[in-house]
Structures are given as structure tokens and as C-alpha cells.
Amino acid sequence: MSSRLHDLAGSHTWKCALLLALASCAVLPLLRGGANGSEPTSRTQAEWPLELDGQALQPLALSDVEARFAAHFPGRIGRFRAEADIITLRVAERPTRMLHPAADCYQGLGYRIRDARLEHDEHARLWRCFTAWRNGQAVRVCERIQARDGAAFTDTSAWYWAAVLGRSKGPWLAVTKARPL
Image 1 (tube, helix red, strand yellow):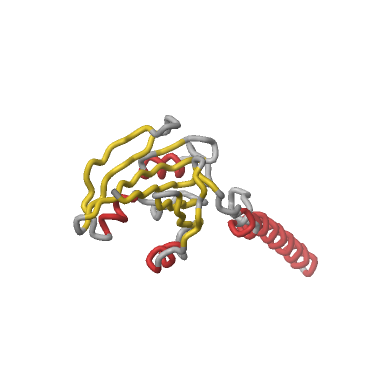
Image 2 (cartoon, one colour):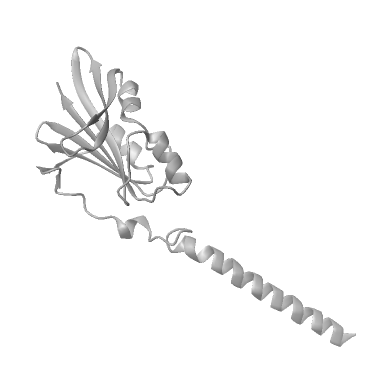
């Protein structure tokens, strides 16, 4: 009988060891930066670009609202001046509903949105543009999302579903240009 208990104990120990090894294999990628094997965000964040479309970028501080939003954003957010434009760059490391249309932000700040349409720039890239009005002042806003593989999106919902379904690979760069009129 004691031999039988020894066999069961040995079998139980082996099963526990195997279960522990399998659990370690499942958890290790998460500890190393995600289930997809990517590096942790803090180790892969590159510096912001010095220029965009040939225009020098001058860093600006995030507003208090932007800083609070950025603290929870799965990526990073930067704000810059380039000639007359204020440019907001958002790098999304993973699909997120926090990467939403600029029109939503402007409406949330009390702007009325008009003349929304798709436009091509001088480089033949497609942008979603609109005019935002508040207190008699107008701002022309254009935005697009660029994937690492070169795919581009002007609709955040289309980007989100392409990213979630694996049809677009990140990280993604969302560029929003605002110019007072």
C-alpha cells in the first residue's frame, strides 16, 4: 500500500511541475512585453520626429486636459508647432477606443463642426478635414492615421476594426493638424 501512495504522490508531483511549467510559458511573454512578443512600450518608444512633411516641429507642452488623457492612453501623445499649424501626434501601441476622431474632441470643447470632407494633400495622401467654429473663431483641422506597414486611415472606426482583426499592424501614428483661419 505504501508503494501505491508513493506512486500517486510521484504522479501528482510530476503533474504539478508540468502545470507550473506550462503556466510559466503562458505568463512569460506578458512579463516581457505582451502576448504578441513585442517589447514593452517604455523600451521601444522612439524620440518624436524633428520634422513633419518638411516642416520643423517645435515641441509644445500638453494642456492639463491632454496630460490627463495621455496618462491613460496606450501609447504616447505629443503636441508641436509647425509654422502656423498646431500638430498633435498620437502613437497607439495597440487598438484602442481612446484613439477617437478629432471632431469628437473639438465638439467636446464646444466647437461646431462644419464642412467635413476627405481631401488629398500635396503628397496625394488622403486626410479627413473639417472646420471647427467657436466664439466667432474658426480652425481648419485635418487628420489621418498611418500604420507601420504604410496603410493609412481617415476613419478611426475603420482603423480600429482593421487593427483589432489583425489587418493592420501597429504601432500607429495619428496626425492631427489644426490651423487657425
